[in-house]
Image (cartoon, rainbow, N blue to C red; front, side):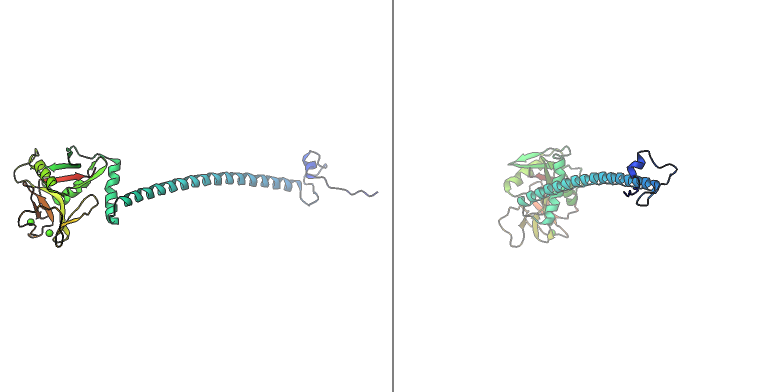
Length: 262
Ligand SMILES: [Ca+2]
Ligand SMILES: [Ca+2]
């Protein structure tokens, strides 16, 4: 009976019974105990590294997924807002951008009135800003009007579209506590885009042409002989009688009317 001498297994070595006098015992595959021990340690270290790497990658994936979901929600909401504004107006993209700029500000600060009273007439809301001591150009008045908010709506220089509205604003001007005879007020009319064609500049940044070649059917109240483009006159002043005159946009007047669509 022939017996084959089998080398001890790794477990037998680790069971504490290595052959005597052999710290570097050779086994069947030619590896020593030290080599096997180092291999196992290396493998265990690799497994540990892999587990940590997977844990980090899992955490990063979760963070990326949460960011992705938040970004999708934000884009969806932005698209809804854009569609809402588009559906409410057919204005050009520049007008839309102009309006959005001021509308979003008024969403955050619905009532920026700077201590001035708001008055109402037939569903329209106004402020009469200024005093005899004031020196206000049309551009300054326009920017000031847009900086104001009432009940979430941005202000703009008043657009006057009826005799009744014009008469109401005339009375508010002359009875204003800061008014003195011959003071005037800016309104939101200009022909700076096309000479001789006057349009209203409202909260959207541009409005309807109400006076000019071929334009009929719109309210206007220019005094006799006006508009006359005397020098360079592209902005419209409103006098104590409620009559209108084109004057230089950098002329300094005492008042301006702000209107809100709220
Ligand atoms: Ca002009
Ligand atoms: Ca004039």
